[in-house]
Length: 106
Length: 468
Image (tube, chains in turn purple, blue):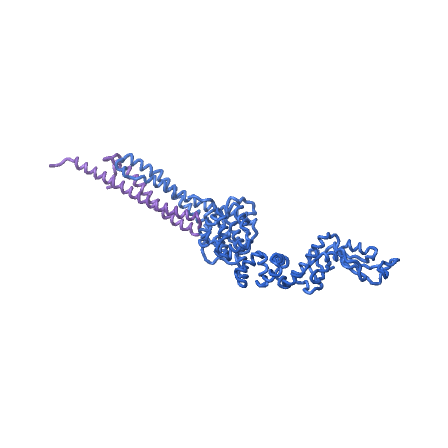
């Protein structure tokens, strides 16, 4: 049975909003990975016979954006994990609250 | 990323650049759209609904949007480079355009310039404009051997650089790093004076420096050529190539002289004679022969002889001949134009038609006159003189002498200056072609009026007349 998060906040956490955000972050990570790989491959071809000052500028900028893209990719992934972890924590808290509220049979 | 169109890109393939732009721009636009659209909305929603959890979440949407924007700008730059190449070369790369220039064939550039398309906005367009101004030059005799892969521009620069034996090493590293050639050239354009100073004042005696003290490379003229066009690559190349050849020629001449006379005397000789005269003389004369000429005649006269007759004739006749030679004199001109009167039954000299007719008037009759088909101002006259008394007066009644028909070739309509110019032209040609007999005698020469016959009696030309 699949767990469906409640539509409203549970302990201050909206699982539906979190799931939507994780979905977008996953997409962003995927697109970013594709962008890094494509940019590198196409740049290699474009640079084959390109020499001069603007080639140097391009190279420098390419290195910079690739580094930045990798950093952002890490950030996206860690954000995604953080949101998932926050959801897990919220669910844990909810279960704890539920257990605490349940009547005892002593 | 900045950069003026068309500068800083050599040999790039516009199609490859376009492919890069097409693919990466699509991905970057999708990323930007995601970052500013659904991702941003989801993050806002999450922050609103889960403020506690959202507190530690970074603004990845904003970072992603910034990155995508930066990447799109990079694509814009690449697209500009591709566009520059396409606009400049109409699909041809800069390499394709410059290779013919390197080979001495400016045909494609001429074609670009000739079809009326405005080209001045692109560097290669300026190249084409220049190609019309600058006559094609011969191919570089010594293509660069480094095998560097930067293509035509690099080779072109290297070729010119090699020609001047590394004098420009201090100016540009471009010779050895063709990928920087364009940038280096631009530096030269921006600082032509520094570049030329380095060229002319270089430590290498055999090239720029020697050229400067020889006094035959005019840095001002070179500088003008560099700067007056607003500064673009090919103009500098062209100027440098010419400069390099000049320097190389001086270098070769200096070496030839120095081998026999020593460096000091070689320098002195070149300085006294000047570049052109020395260059001419070393083609046929040994350094010792040149020095003998200078000792006998002085540098000014030797310079004149080199220019007027050339080294072959100088060597053939020798310094002593020219020391004695008087050529066309006032006496020559008097004989040729006005004549020396009537002697031994004929009119002596007098090859000016008007002067001849004046002379024969009352002294004889023109029997026949034939005009040259090649030059109507020249004619061949057959004449007879009247009989004379013992005291040389014309006998009366007038009777033609028994001396038979005499001949005279004349020219009509020449001023005295034109006559002298013609005579000098004939004498010079006779010496240049080594047809003037050293010990005197008849000779033939070519002039602008046609062939002439002359007679040389050392040290002067005594007569000359049209060979008709």
